Length: 237
Image 1 (tube, rainbow, N blue to C red):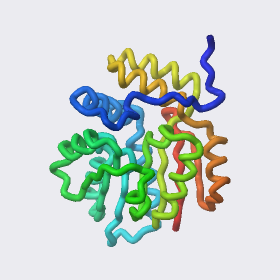
Image 2 (cartoon, helix red, strand yellow):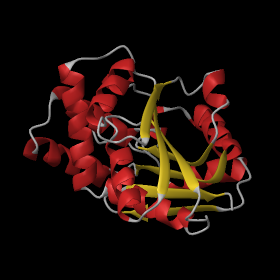
Image 3 (cartoon, rainbow, N blue to C red):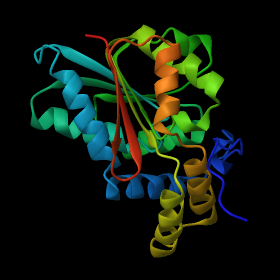
Image 4 (cartoon, rainbow, N blue to C red):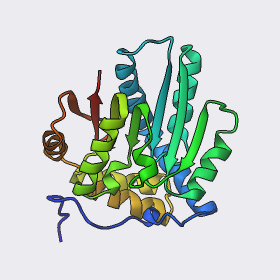
């Protein structure tokens, strides 16, 4: 049977279970971070943030929230960039898994401007969060189309500068390439199975454009980037 990518799959990922914790999950988070870095994902998100920062005063403190922060690698990249360029960043990682948050805290102990919070994205607590820039890297695809509309609406209402989404392009070639990558990196069952499911839960450009149209987003820019990613920047300024 051929691979059907016409519609986003409704399958759940192993790591969608927020109760999971322990060494195996920590290793899976590290693997995701390593592959994301290898394929240019961190660079894509950083470049997107740089575009939004052009519209801000470099002398002010910029608050950045990373939703679905994983092991916190993107926040550490941002912290290093901010320090190198004398920018004052206040960084917050948000995840619904307590084990993930604890692991990210452990890896970020030497970064005083990074904090973490275990918050459900659909909670009233999350709805009240404010930030200048909000990041959503490899996280949006975990949700249904209806949930995504709710999430992006909250992002745009609570961000003063803008929103950065970096997520997967659903394609047969991306799926087959990840099968090869799984062998090269000798990925665990969790990393391999979730990686393949993630691609099938990824997006076509017209789907992201549909979200933008339904939410009446005026400054929304969606572009395809290597490796099989979509960069979606929503500017508020």
